[in-house]
Length: 96
Image (cartoon, rainbow, N blue to C red; front, side, top):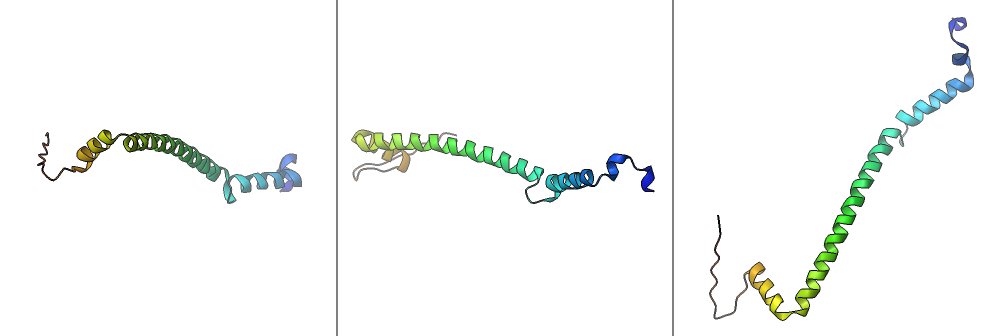
């Protein structure tokens, strides 16, 4: 039965190498599919990190502008949180 197999399949080192490659690519914990998924997740997280870094800089800029200008702070408080002075009435108009 072994006489009918090609010479390469009888070679111990070739068979060991093939089994090792099968193990590394499909069976082991750090297989090729898992490495691909982890790389894809890493790219997504890096993209999110850069997005949030830009957003943090924008918020810090807005905060510094609000804290330096009293009129802008009052405008922000009135528009965002509907704050008012004691002698004022506020009417909120909702557009449909």
